[in-house]
Each structure stands twice: as C-alpha cells, then as structure tokens.
Amino acid sequence: MLSEFQIRFFFPVITSAPILPETNKASKRRAFCLLVTSNLYSMLCNFEISLFVVVPLEEIKDSGKHAGSIVIRRLFNQLKNIKVAEGCGYFLKITKVKSVGRGKLSNSSKYLMFPVTFYSCTFLPRTGEVLVGIVTKVSMGGVFLKCGPMNSIYLTRRKMPNYNYVSGENPFFLSDDQSRIENEVAVRFVVFGVRWSRTRVREFNILASIDGDSLGPVSLNGFDGLEL
Image (cartoon, rainbow, N blue to C red; front, side):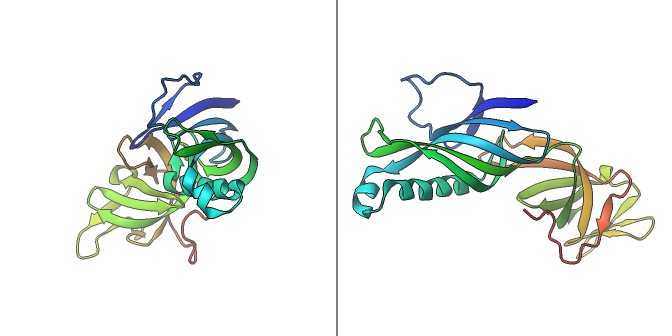
C-alpha cells in the first residue's frame, strides 16, 4: 500500500496538508514543499522527496563555485535543521540526489529557488514495534528513554507491571525478581503510542510499554539503543 501526501513547512511551525496545486497567493513564509511516496510498513523508509532549496543570490555570485555544489550543501543544511517531519519521520541520510533543477528568482529577487529531488533514508516510529532504549531520567511516574534519533520516549509505571518505585538520590524501579530500571540501563520496550508534537519542537512523542514477554531491562554490552 502506497501513501502519497504533501508536507508543507512553515516557520516557526510545521503542518501537513493534502496535495493541492500551487497558487500565486502561496504564503511567502513557506520554506519548501515535499511530495513523498513510500511504503510505510517499515520504520526504516526510503523516500523520494522533492523540495525547493533556497540560496541567496549573492552567495552564488561571490563564491565562484558551481551552483550545483552550493545547492547540495544548502540541502544538507536544511535537512539538518529540520531533523524530522510528521509524515516522513527522522531524516537519517540522503542516499541519492536524483536531480537539481534550474533556479528561479524569488519575489524579492534576492534568492534563487532550486527544485531538488532526492532519496532519503528516514526513521518513522510506528505502534507495535519492539525497540531498545537507554534510560535517561527516572521519576515517580515512570522513566524517560532515548533510542536512536528519538529523545522523547516515556515509559509510565502503569506499563511496568510488577515494578515498584524506590526513591532516593538515584531513584529506580525494582521488580519482584529484583530486576532494576535506573539511569543508563537498556530497556527493551514495545511502542504502543506515537504522537507528533504540536509545539515548536519538532519531534515524535513516544509511549512505551514493557507489559509483555521478553520486555524489560537487557544487557547490551555498550550498545546505545538503536544504531542508525
């Protein structure tokens, strides 16, 4: 099953919208548009993405470099700043640049907008997937974990059956079989909730659970969660 959609980036927030034809009344605040087609069954996806890379006209005139190399560098910088998009997930790397079109002057005549199409490997969190995260914070209500590019994973104590909170200078959760969940411990969990953040911080909020077989603290010998 293929999912096709368009993600429009505005600043300072990101919103998603169905595919619509561009009009001359499009907001000047729009940074670029993405047209994405991908098989979404896997958390690791390979998207074909089309967007506009904005380059100051003076940068091309003063650098003396070929415009294509400047556009590619700007493309990497844009994705580095964006980091993640609701429909695509976390941008991991550009696997191939398919095409760089001819630049068009913006309305202000100070920038050139280059249409670029490229392939990008992304990480799109999905409910039901089993992952391993590292505990970064322990509180009475649960623990926070990080896993790969995701830094906002919450494991509530309600999804930690048979674990009891132990307070102190370095609090932790202790199970009936003496297993401990504390800072820097690796925990295998299942994703049971994924929500896109509606704040200025672009990220996914992940809800985790260890209520199930083969879930809970694990020994990974230095493995830092999900390696991407």
